[in-house]
Length: 354
Image (cartoon, rainbow, N blue to C red; front, side, top):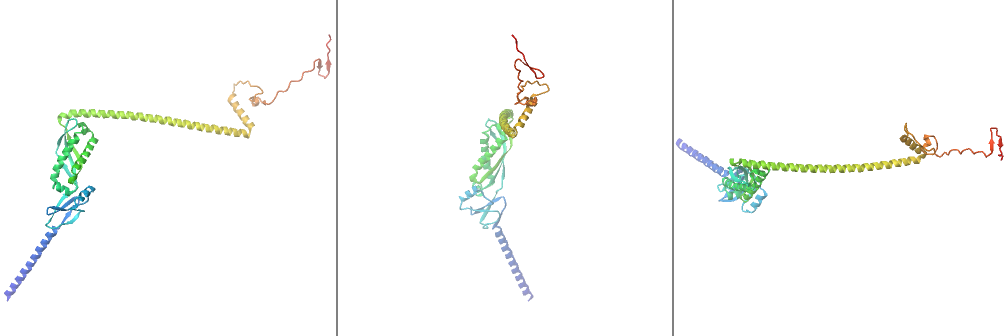
């Protein structure tokens, strides 16, 4: 009886262990299925979901107008935005991820020929990124293939751009060389527009000169700097003349305006003075005449002045105390002829005797 109970217990234990094993296997399978049903799209990444060798969905954080127009031409491919946890069909869908951040490309030093037939060695870098992962996958599939293509196009554009400029300009003129790099970046990006790539920036790390061209390029640079200096001096002298001419013109204009204004003020003052004199004269003509004569005396009569003035002149009215309208008294009448009047009032008449 005890043996039968042990056998039954062992059978139950085996069934229980088998049950746990089956549960563990099912849980493991479910975990594998679940892990293959999702994937995480991080910041700075884009992804393609491939099903049976065909791209079904494109995941991107954000898109530009150009990418939107390109994806509109591919209606069979679904475009989804945003990052985070994404779902896919397990064991059927394959996820291909690409970086959407800037990728640095460092090209080896290359020899180029300038417009003045000098050889220069450029060591440059480029920053590029994948704008459209669908077009990039169809064109290159991997980043290394894209780098090889970028190297070829970049070197070709470098030769064309450098061949348009003289060597001393490339070395000494930073503004011109900077504009050349901007134009190169735009030209290279135009070549990769339909391949989902954009070149953002191109920089020159170092420029080397062959030893046999040092003296020639230095002389050209020196000559060019002297020419620029002469042009700057000429422009400075021209600006100086213009500034002086403008200053002289403004001085003349200001002086003329000031003189005109002074004459106006002077005329207004004279007019007001005449009006005041007329009003004063109208109130008391005698006092006004007296005041004018006193002012005339002050201006003409000094400590050693000699004046010859008629007695009937208005000028002698207050100076000599003679009125201008005074007439001298008439002379006394003469006595009749033959009449002698003495002091006693007697009159003698003398008769001439023949």
